[in-house]
Length: 230
Length: 230
DNA sequence: GCAAAAGTGTTATTCTTACACCCATGT
DNA sequence: ACATGGGTGTAAGAATAACACTTTTGC
Image (cartoon, rainbow over all chains, first blue to last red; front, side, top):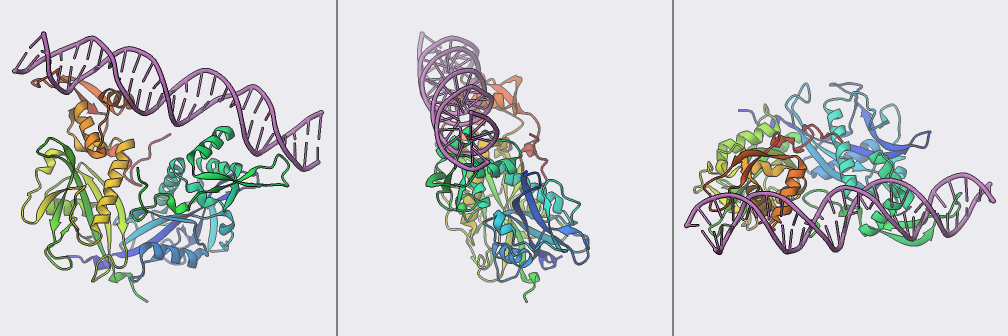
C-alpha cells in the first residue's frame, strides 16, 4: 500500500496584470519564470514551489511570489488543485494553484531578465507541465468574475476616472463598452462613489475621480471570505 | 528547512441529496461518518481518506465515496483545498474537498447505521476539524450554482415533471417559485425538452414528462470541463 | 472655433415578476 | 360538480442596449 508521503505538494500562482502595447491597446499579461532544472529544463512555467510544513497554502503562495517576482498582489484567490497522476513526468506532484491580480505600478517591480519575462495571456508559448491548461482556466475565471464582481478594483489605485475603470473592463473582456451605460451601471451599483476631485492637465474636459467603497477583499475569494448576506 | 513530505494529503467529499421530511417538506441533507480514532474520536465528519499515489484526486474521491457510503454520485466537482496549519491538532493535513450530488434513489444505498447517518444541511451538530466551514461553503456553492446552471439535473432521474424539477429548485433555494414563470424559464433555456409521455394515475391533470438535453457534466465543473463557447 | 473626451437624456427591447384565468383529471 | 395541480395569457416594472445630444477642456 502506497503512502501519501510520496506525493509532493506545491503551490503555483497565475499572476495577471494589464499592460499597454505600442499601439495603446491594453490587455492581460502574466510573468513566467524559466525552469532551471529537469523536467522541462529551460521551459517557461508558472512561479511556484514546495509548501513549507509550517505555513498555510495562501502564505506559501504569497511568500513564493515575493521571492521569485518581488510582487505583492492586490488580490489573491485559490484557483484549483491540479493532481493528475502524470502531470509531472518523474514524480507525483499535486499543485494548489492561486491566481493574483497586481496593479500596473506594482507590476513594474518584476525584474524582467533572462529568467523572468512577461507574456501576453492570449499568446503563450508551450509551457511546462499542464501550465497552459492552468492559465487558460485562470483567464476564464478572471473574465467570468469581471462580469459580476468588483474585482477590477485590484488593477487600479485608490482613485481613478471612470474611463480608466472602463479601460480595465475593456482590456479584460476584449470588447468595447458604451461609456454612457457603463457610467450608469457603476454609479447604480453602489460600489463606486465620486470624489470632489477632477484630473486637470488633460487635453479635454477634466474627468472626475472616483473611489471604490470598501476593500477589494469584499469580493468572494473562497470559504474564508464572509458571505454577502441576502 | 522542512520538507513537504511531512504534509499529509487527503480527500474529503460533501455529499448532498434531497430528502422529504414527515410533513412533506423537501430539503438538503448529507451523510456523515463517525470518527473511529483520535483526534475528534466519535465526532461526526465528512467521509474522506488519504490520496493514493497512483490515483488522481477525483478518482480518489470517487473510490473513497464508494467504500465509505456505497454511493456513486451523478455529479462530482472539486470544491476547495483546505490547508491551514492548525486545522488538525496533531499533524499537518491538506484536504482537497469535493462536493457531490446524488439522486434520491441512489441515496437509499447509504446503509445508515451506528457510523453513518444523514443530517439536514442547515442543522448540523459541531463537526470534526473545520468541517462545519467546509459544509457551509459547499452549501453556498450549491445554492449559487443552482441559480445559473443546469445542476438540478443531478438530483433527478432521466425523466421528470416540471413540478418535480421546480421542487428541486425550491428545496435547494428554500423559497417558493412561481410555477408559470418557472415553466417558461426552463422551456426557453433550451436545457429541457418535453417528451410525448405524461404521468397518469395522479389525482389531477396528468403532467407531461420532460428530459434534459445532454449530460449533467455539461455544467462547468473545473478546468477539465470544456468551456462553453460565446 | 474645432476636436475629443466627459457626461446627460431618451427610447426601444428584453427580462422579470405578479397574478388572472382556463384545462384535465380523480373523487 | 368540484377540488387541485397542470398549463396559458397578459400586463406592469426593471434591466439592458443603442445612440443622439450637450458640456468642458486644450489647442
